[in-house]
Amino acid sequence: MRLLLVGLAGGMGLMLLVHLVQRAGGWVVVGPGERAGGRVGWTNLAILVAVSALEEWLFRGWLFDLLLPRVGATGTLVVTSAVFGLLHLGNRVRPLTIFNAALAGAAFGAARLLTGGLGLAVGLHVGWNVMQWPVLGYPLYGLERRSLFHFPTLITCQPRGPRLLSGGADGPEGSLLDTAAFGLLLLFLARLAG
Image (cartoon, rainbow, N blue to C red; front, side, top):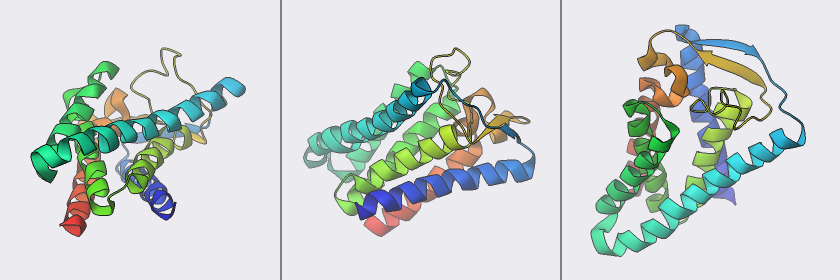
């Protein structure tokens, strides 16, 4: 439980750091929060948390356990991260967003290698997603524009300016700031695990 809470705090803090850099650079417009259809909004929030945790169980749990004895730690990180990144193709996002999803998957995999369990990885993933979408109200791969996925937000954030820094319609996950954040997290966790 302690590692899950550490991961939640770490994931939320990392996303908040990206947001603060975007604000300082003028690459995001902040507005008031949104209320989202009562029970439906809260149900969607629960689904977001459950899907994030399920992705960790699938990629850093089941697939990780399947591959680790066969291809070793590096091979397992590469395969699980690549598959995780490619899974995001279904969201109709730009190539940098796919790369960043794979990089995040590698960081979550490094958390799994470091701890031997899923708590830290699940916490990082859930913390990042909750801070990015329900708390800060960034775009959710355009799903919110198609009215497919709404939940209450504390504030709303709309990226603006250079797409490489704002992420454009993909939100921060389509930016070089996301690349830097997850790249540094991966290096930090890999060094600790090493």
